[in-house]
Every structure is written in structure tokens, then in C-alpha cells.
Length: 505
Image 1 (cartoon, helix red, strand yellow):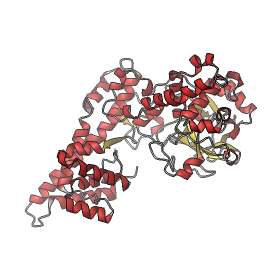
Image 2 (cartoon, helix red, strand yellow):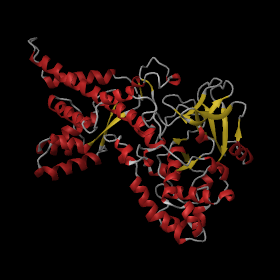
Image 3 (cartoon, helix red, strand yellow):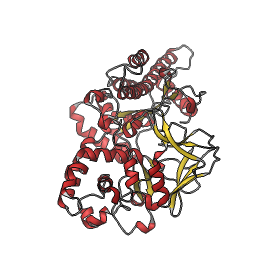
Image 4 (cartoon, one colour):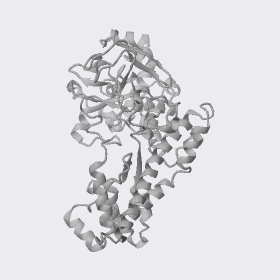
């Protein structure tokens, strides 16, 4: 750590060493700690733009030749940045970032490196299908390795077995996934058009003096920038020192902000002496935390308890991540509806239209236990007869998410089918968690349990609510109060009430 701090200061970095220290935290690795009381808006350290490592600051793209760099597709995705980090590492002491690169981890607890046995523990979650391991290996074999082998003047053949292997590629990719920032391109770098890695890095950087801005604004969850102009101005970058801060659900007390010639890490609230200095990953669900960073957040689910002082070992069954979500794929909805084979072409037409209208092919269920309006709208769309389908297309608007009795029946079957994708029940998982000691379960299996339990809790609670609402609507419809309210109307009225009163996330 001393070598990194010395390198940082020698190259123009500034740190308030009286306020900020770095230490090892049990179970969380290295992090930053307040050495004295820090007020809100205090600059903890500043990183010169020259110390940021990206495809625009590394000399590699220009050594290769910008035209060839783009011709080989190195400006798309993360392949270019990963190769830059590999090359800078291979250069050893000759690299501007040598001390920093030497300090980065080479082992990870992310599922990318799990065994098949451990990955089986994540069955039913969305983690495995999002690992992107096959895509990464395709990029390596089709883009990175051919470039490396074609330029022995830049990549000496004797260095390839040590610095340019698939294993090293995965390690460097994991470093970037877990530690990078979305940084706005420096205007002076704009002429060197080496392209941009896609968004989806660990953290973003805010405009100066704007701590209220939301994290990740302008980027979609899957890492694709929503606006092409904005995409051209953002570069995924490694930011020394800033990437040493840990993060935890709703504990953020510092964030990185733009300044003219540097990036500044600034406190966003008062920090007391001895407290950890937390950055933010956007309060992600445990599935994403595990996939990207190799850890999960476990905080008390009782809102009256202070998350920052929780002890996960006290009562593991009472802990979880309030940001957990469950993903429901559109093809699962199709399988529940069990539409006749002869309607396959019509179904595809409707799905394509749904996507063109901005609908998602993955629907999100969160801890509010509210049925997503998009799920209801999609179900109604797929059940329209031909005449109503034609009217919907003419209106150029998906059906309203009116939750009638028929739609609710489909929703319940969708939730049941989704819950059935996990090989175990939530009660089984909790019992396993309570009956085993810390030494009887591997870290990977503990993390998998946390992800599974969080998702199943959401599904089971939402399913319970949905079934209760069906029963209540049926009772109301058959009661002798003279109102003769239809079950569907009862469901719709109840849904509207829940929407108005549901708590904010």
C-alpha cells in the first residue's frame, strides 16, 4: 500500500492523509477509514486525469495504430481495455501504472471462477446466464489473441504464455468489472478516437458538487448506453485509489466527482472518526453484487435497525438485501400461457411489437411485492383476440395493466413456475443456513444461499399476496351485500390502492 501511495503522490495525486487512511477490514479486504471527523463536502483525495488508466490514456491503441485497432473491433466492448491492462502489466516497471497494477487482486470470489459444483448452487437465479464467460472467451480467441500474435514488435512472443493467456484475460476482465468507473472523456482526448468500452462498470462519476445525482444515470442495466452521443463521451476507466473504497447497501458517504483536471473523492455526508469510508455500487441486488464483485450484502431486514452496525453472524435468517429483485423472462410467461403451436407466428409478431414499443423481455419483481404493471400488460397483450390485437396496433400503445381475474390467474401460475426453477425451497435454505457453522459451508455456497433466499422470499411473499387477493375478490363477488362487484373489479381496485401506498425503494 505504501508503494501505491508513494507512486500516487509522486505523479500529482493529492490525499488528505490526516483524514483518510487505508486498512484491511475483516471479510471485506482493503478499504478506507476516517482518521478524524470528516464534514460533508470534504475532498478526501484528488486523482489527476493522467493517472486514470483507459483506452484513451494507454499508449497501446496508438502503438497498434488507430485504424487497425478499430478494424479488429477493439473499440467495441471491453476487449480493448482488457488488452491495455494486460499490456501495461506485461511492461512491468516501464508502465506508468506499474505500482498500481501490482496492487490489484489476482484472485476473485466471483462465479466466473467457480467450479461447476458451486455454480449448481445458483440454479434458478439469473447469475450464471449473465456471467458472459463464453462471450469473453470468444472475444479473446477472435479479437485479442490474433492481434497479439500479429504484432511481435509490440507483444514479444516470449511474453505471450505469461501475460496474454485466456486465464489472464479473465483476471484482467474481473479487475475491470469490479473496480472500474464510467468517466467522461477529456475534451483533449477526443481527437484520439479509439472508441469506448460499453458502460456497466463498477461505479460512475458525478458532476462537480452534485451529490444528489443518482448513480448510473444514463446507462441501462445491461451495460449498453441508452444514448449514442453519451456513449461516445464515456470511457470505462481504472481510477487508482478511488477503487479501494468498499461499498455497502445504503451506506454511501463518499463519491467521485469531476473537476477540470482531475477527479475528486468527496464526502457526501459527515463521517465520524474510525468509520469506514464507503463508495456506492448503486445498491445492487445480491445476484449482481456476487456476479460483479464476489460478495453479497447482508443487512437487517428490520428497517428500524442500523444497517451500518449489523452483525451478519448474529441471526443470518433475519438478514438480507433490501435491493434484491427477481427476474421473470418473457419466455416463461409464454410457457405458462401454453399457446397453440399454430399461433407461433402471431405470438412472435406480438412479442416483436412489444419490444419495439419499449417493453422488456425480462420483467422485474422487487421487494415491494407488487406485481409489475409490465407483466400484466404483456399477459393481456398475448391473450388478445385478433380484432383487439388490430385495435391495439392501431392505437400504437400496449394494453393497460388492468389486473382482472383472468390475468391474475396467469400471474399466479407465472410466479409458481418461476419459484419452481429453484431446486430447493426457501425453508430448506434457511434451515441449512441455521444448522451449519461457518466452517461447514464454503464461502461460495454461503453467497449462493444469500442470493437464493433473497429471491425466493420475494417470490413467496408476492405469491401469498396474489393468492390472498384472489380469495378476497371471490368472497366479495359472492357476498350478499347487494353490490355485486365483479371479482376482476375488486382486484383492480385493490391493485390501485397498493400502487398508491407502496413504499418507495
